[in-house]
Length: 480
Image 1 (cartoon, rainbow, N blue to C red):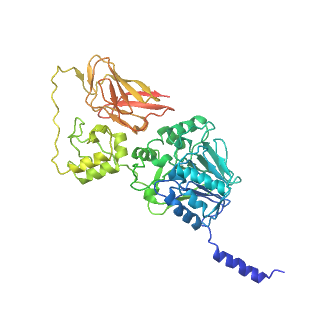
Image 2 (spheres, rainbow, N blue to C red):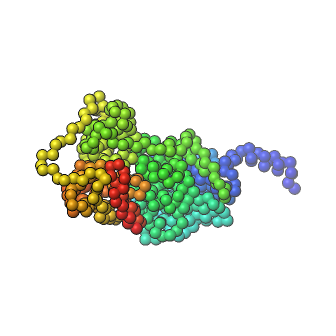
Image 3 (tube, one colour):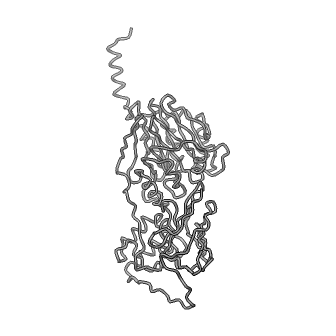
C-alpha cells in the first residue's frame, strides 16, 4: 500500500528539483534567440511540445542549450535545419549533447561542408530519424491546436541552399508566424505564385534582413504587424539592409533585430499576442536618409557633407558606415563612391575619414564647349518610360519631344520609392532612348548603370515611376 504522506513528499521533492518551464501551456510561444549573426528559433506549442529551428554557428551551441535548459526542455519533438549553412546548423551538435530529438527535419539539399557532413554522421550515430521537408506538408507538433505548414522547398529542389530554405507558417487561432530561413526573392515569388497563404502576424525576415529578399509585393502580401530580423551587431555583411527595414516599417510593421533587442519572445493566445525583449525596443521608426545638399548640384561627390550640416566631420563618417546599404539603395552611388571603384564599400568610409580635415570644395560646373542643344526645362519634360523588363532588370526612358532634354536630377523609382535612381547630367536628344540597368557597368550615352548588388524590380509585377527633380511625376509604367 502506498503511503499518501510519503507520496506527497516525493512529489513535492520532484517539484523542487525539476525546473519549471517558463512556457504557459495553452499558449504558443515563439522565441527568436540571440545567437549573433545566425538563426535560432524556439517554438513551444500550446500542448507544451517543443520544436527548435536552427541553432546558430558552432559557438552559439552552448547559448541555445542554456536557453533550452532555462525553459526546462530536455526533449525536442522536432529539430528543423532550414538549410545547411554554418550559421544555421553549426550549433546543432552541441544541442544534441544536451537534449533528445524525436525527428530531424532538413531541406533535403545536403551541403558538403565539414559542418554539414559532421552533423549527418552525428545524426546517424544517434539514430535520430530524419526527414526532408517539402512544400505542401505539415508538421504534427500540436495538430489539435496549431497548424504548421511547410511552404518551401519545392519538390523539384535546386542546389541553392538559401532558396531551398525550409519555410514554415504557424497558425494558432487568428495569430500566425511566417519563418523564412534565408529565403530570397526567388522563393518569395514562388510562394506568392503558389497561392498558398503567406499572411502573418509575425514575419521572421529572410536572410538576416539582406537585400536579396523581402520584396515590396511579398511584404505587402504578408502584411506583418511585427518583423523580426536575426542578425549580429556590427556584422561584416551590413545586415540588415536599411532599404529592407524601411520597406517593412512603411508597411506598418514594428521591426526588431536580435542585434539591438537581444532575444525576442512572442507569446500568443488564439486572439492576441504579447512581445517582450531581453535588452531593447524596436528599431527607430524612421530610417535616416540623406538628401543631396544644394552645394553638390552636379552629383559628382566632391562635397562629402553626408548629413547635410554644411561641414565635413566625423558624424559624416559614422553616417556612411551605419547606412551603407540604405545609401546604395536610395542615393546616387557615384556621390558616395569616394575611391571610385564603381560601388560603395568600406574603402569609401576610410577614404572619407582621411579627408574630413581638408577644406570642402564646392564644385564649379564645367562650361559646355560644344554647341549647346536646345533643352526643355521643368515642367516641360517630354519624356516617357518606354520599357520595363522585370526579369532582366532594366527600365528605358524615351524623349518623345522635338527638343533635347537634360535628365539631371530626374529619378526612376519602384513601388513605394524603395529604390531610387537619380540621373546624372545627361542630355537626351529628341527621339532618343536611354536605358537604366540595375547592375554595374560603364555608363554610355544610351546605357546607364545603377550599380546595385541586388534586384530592384519584382518579377511578380512592379511599377516604374519617372519624376522631375521636384519629385512631381512625369511618367509611370505598370508591369503586371
